[in-house]
Amino acid sequence: MNYSNTLQTDLIKIIKKSQNIIITSHTNPDGDAIGSMLAVHHYCNLLGINSQCIIVDNVPKNLQFLNGAEKIEVYNKQRHKQLFSKSDLIVLVDLNDIARVRDMEVPIKESKAYKIVIDHHINPKDFADYYFVNNNIAATGELIWQLFMSDPDFKLNRNIAEALYAAIVTDTGNFHYPRTTAKTHNIISQLIEAGADPTELYEKIYNQSSFNVIKLLGIALSNLKLLYNGRVCLMPLSSVDFRNTHTSFRDTEFFVERTLSIEGVSVGILITEVLEKGQFKVSLRSKEDYNVASIAQFIGGGGHINAAGATFQSSDLNSAIETIIRLIGKLFE
Ligand code: 5GP
Ligand code: MN
Image (cartoon, rainbow, N blue to C red):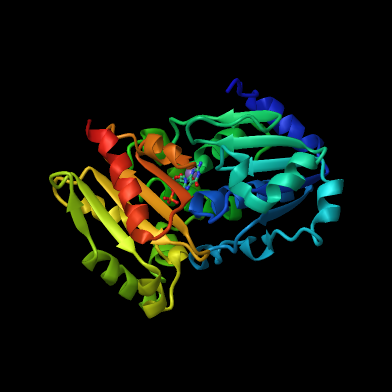
């Protein structure tokens, strides 16, 4: 598409001119989505601008502790009708495709408000008025930080520091994914100085799994299969596995990373049955230049070179697995 980045100083001006801002992000929100939304919300609070975060799913349990998370609302057509008609700006963070807001796609498209996208995924689609996107950056939270830095009046506080820390720590996989840089650590250093506590935040984000979720991880690990001469590791989870542990596909957030801890494995695949029948979610992770976003795009998804996903239709788990395995073969041609 033909997007061009708007100057950060102009984006700040647009935000400051607004009176009612809606802040949103993608379905099945992760730390970068929630943290980036909340950072923008707290920034609006500093400026005395009304803002409301709205998403299509609940905030994941491990991120509910963040200040302001309790005020994030789940989209409801009736309840939010008025808000959409009076808002003059919609800020969409951590997404590059309007389809990823699911039921909010229509009200956003129909709204007269200006739309700003702040994002780091590849191939952004054309649906907004202003873009601030860069796919060389590890987390949308870093882009939000850059935006704030272009405001000479910006004052960092603990709420913003914790929100951005959560965004960056999760999207860098604890500072080890490829796009983690000295700049990332420099930002983190300033967030820590402003009150973000790495030990406390790690504990809250990563160490509060329910017993059932860890049992599910055990099942996922025992289901692992190696393919393509040990270069690919498949982690399937069926609806029976979820039922037996009273969990759902949304409890699998950090599972797929485990596949890459196996010697020789360059591509990891988590495939799960989603709540709606016939829907399957695939999470892909890779090392080096194995481009899993290109694979996800074949089935309507997307993401980054080394981390991508999609939700797609299939008759059953086995045929969904077959589809993915066949597509993954393209990486080794
Ligand atoms: P995950 O596998 O953790 O859900 O997602 C990995 C990466 O792929 C994330 O950056 C996420 O935003 C992106 N992603 C996941 N599912 C989809 C999808 O259905 N469509 C698009 N465009 N990106 C996705
Ligand atoms: Mn992100």
